[in-house]
Image (cartoon, rainbow, N blue to C red; front, side, top):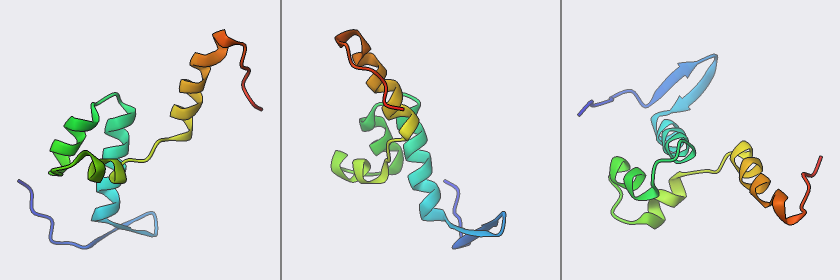
Length: 78
């Protein structure tokens, strides 16, 4: 396992915490279709609730999922 001793990374003049990268990685895994149980295991969480707190749903993902309702007569909101 890689041990990271630096608390912050300096990227594009913005401080990014290693903890923020965990949230981003978890969100990208979820958006990529990885099961939430697998994401929880990768992050080392013992509960799905904790993994769900780490993941954030992207607006693009919400939009794509809402398109599934088009056959019911719903239209996209501009």
